[in-house]
Image (cartoon, rainbow, N blue to C red):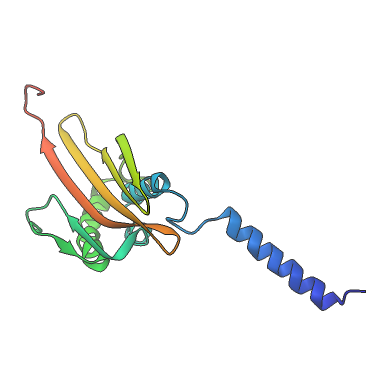
Length: 157
């Protein structure tokens, strides 16, 4: 006969294993899912949601005259997003403050790395984004974000 304590320990272990298999850690599923979560974080204006997608040593080029050079490190990138998100929260209502969608998403996989390119712009502005993603410790993380905006001419081309 198996002692009740042993049954309880095994049952507890099985429940925790089942929970882990149904809710993968952020960024551990696929580069495409990481892109979805990145855009959702922007739509929610949630720096915590975005922060966990970046590697600690990530870099970024952002379309901001206040930050014309490469931004070094996840914390520095998030520090730039925070005031921008606060301003957007005042302009829009939530929980989906923005309505970005990844158009023309292309993901190129190369071993433990991927490059995701897409546009989140409007009819007036191309908002091109490139995420360089790397698999680290079993999870995908953004190691570089390149963002550029290109305003369309009034004639549309």
